[in-house]
Every structure is written in structure tokens, then in C-alpha cells.
Image (cartoon, rainbow, N blue to C red; front, side, top):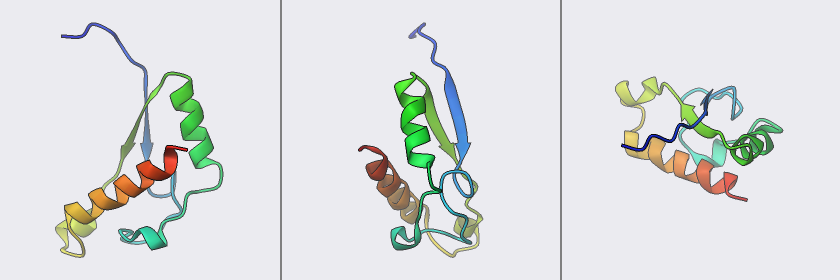
Amino acid sequence: MDSKQHSAVFLDRDGTINIEQDYLVDKREFAFIPGAPEAIRALKRAGFLVVVVTNQSGIARGYFSAAQVKRLHAYMQSQLQG
């Protein structure tokens, strides 16, 4: 077991990182809130583990799949790499 401790910041996805949209799953509809990518990068540079949390009821309602949400999250991560 690694005894090294890390500080973490937990951020809600919709309305905190991206502009709120009902049942967002399409990357073409995704837009960061201005300043959010820079703030996340600053947290990472400061040594924080950044964890994004989200409650996607659209999965349970059959509007989209967990795989679709994972693809959107992969896209988000790719946009934050720069």
C-alpha cells in the first residue's frame, strides 16, 4: 500500500466545468465554462488530484449509454491536456 497522501479536489461536471445542458452526451454540444480549463490545469500544477463527479440519470432513463458518457469524458480529458 502506498503511504503517500494526495490532496484532491472534487468537481461536479455539469454547471461547474461545462455549460449546463440537459442530458449532455454529444461532444459537439459540449462547451467549457470560461476559465474552467485554466482553473483545472492550475489545480493540477499545484499538486491536486482533480476528480470529476457527475450524476447522469440519462443512462438509467435509456437516453444514452455509459459508453457514450465515457467517450464524452475522454473528449473532455483530451481538451484539458494542453
